[in-house]
Image (tube, rainbow, N blue to C red; front, side, top):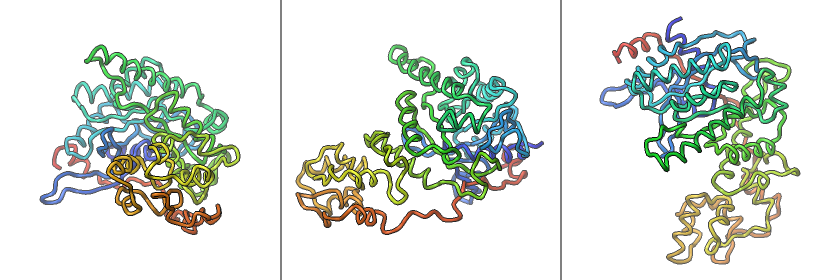
Length: 430
């Protein structure tokens, strides 16, 4: 099997991992232009300082001993299999990097034989990149649940970020849909990574040149829609993971019906993309807006409103908190107002030092008055009728309709690249 054939198989198999945003952009260099982009396996992620970086997103292997019902790489699925040797993948990464196609690597893998064997292959790949090729670019590596702690520690010294996929929101669902996996095997490396990060941070206060362990932190991913958990259960678990393991991100992946199984939604079922979107909105409220999971959803309303984003839904259900006077409210109160974000709240605090704010001034500060006008007063005056009922308010906020997703909504896929193009890249002709 050629390198191109392996790349096509293993980059396409990696697209279901959403710990970074898929691109699929294929753009050849033009006369006078600077930079290239290669479609096969390239995706985008964001660094801590906000820069967008291109990554080669690929699996070490899509051969797997597990038979997880939701996974396209399950051992019982009839699909083409391929495995990169460490040398092949290291050389491919460096060839793409030297041509300025990528700035880093996103590496995951199916379980080849056992977790330890798979981790050793990944470690050899990263060791070649870091030690032989002196590659200093960004690397995100997936830890394999059940692997030896020493291998997890070794991988953490080579990667910038690590992640362990939680996959499903409960032990019951994991046992039903992925009977070969155990919840303990997922949480153990997650806890080890969290402890290693804390230990490194403590050592850096004493020793400046302490070897860094996973300096960009860790993340995880959950599949949404393959199991019966409510949005409240998923959000409560998310909040717990942030608190216990200090994760950088929890990613949500709308279940993509790719294999037929009686335990899963039918293949004709559309992915719950709106539900995934609502979870990301709520995740933002947890991390930046001071909300708790129990505030966003409760036992009476365990799932997100189909027409309202989580912040608007909270505001509609808590009329006693409003209206908020923007010329007097503190930062925490401003963050609760729909249409007011972290940046605009800070701008309001700064701008009102120079005098009272007006509605037009709020617009210039970035406040979305289309939503905020129902929940604020400006100088004691409310811009719209304050006597709107709950149903009228929901209708106004949702513009009288739901958020219907287009029938064509789908997971982005990778496009075709010819073997001739890849050969030219590897030999330095392009």
